[in-house]
Length: 429
Image 1: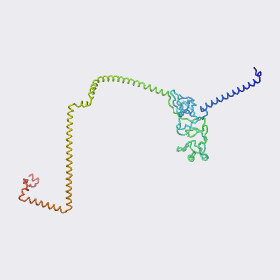
Image 2: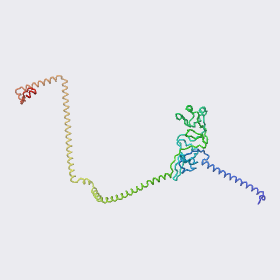
Image 3: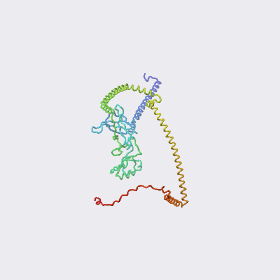
């Protein structure tokens, strides 16, 4: 049916339906486009397409286990990816050139001292991973502050000098002393001018740009202006692959296998000797059974009080020993009584001796007092002694007592005639 054959009411309804379908198609296409662009944006954001990436490169001995697109790890986190791998010239010291990039903000962890590119084993199937280490000292590998080269005079006349930092290391060339480090404020310009420097490379720390403005030059000790062709080199630390380690391990096992076989032969010899030793021990155990039975009987006899003493000391010796001990006990009792009586006598003797000494002391003290009182007593005593001697001498001459004091006569010694002294000549004649 042609459209002109329809009634006006049907044609009006059909046009409304067509407009609704058209709007529905437009809305569906818009939603589909929005979903597609959102998916692209989300994927780009998750992959870091909108983030700033700092390029780096290193060298490797081989490309096994690595491929373009592999993640770069930092402290266990994926912070970038490998972007390029190419072999080097035959006369170049290294074999493989590996280029990679680090996303924002993780390139801030990479400094000139301590940051290295480590290629380590990831699994047992030969897979390897590129890992960068955190810097410990030095300077950031890239800077985002604008660089500017000025003269010493211009740097001294700058109004906002506190916002500018050195972008290079300044050395005293004749002496090779470091006058100023990079990223230090402009406070020692007079000393730098005295050292002969006329211009300085500085950077404005008050302004930070989204892209890199400078890359550190290790040889010159300064930040060079950044271009896309410049990349910072990280020294590589490469470990051997698992396959090479397994191959070395297999070689060592092959070398050690003859020794292992020799060791097994020795173990077999030791086991055979142990078997013969156990058989000999069995024979010894059979021979020791009578001894064990006798020892059992002996121990059974010792299973009552005093059995060991009766076994070591017979009955007669035991009686003699008891008699000897009783006699020794009585002798010790007598000696103890004698010691007690001796102790008593010694005590009495010491008491008597003490009293005698006390009496003698009293006597001497009395005599001393008499002498002190009577000063003529010594003369009288001397006269009494002289008179007693005269009396005794008189008694010796008395006819009645003369015989009591008579002395016995003894033979007188012979008297030898005295010889005259002569000379030797006369004696020989």
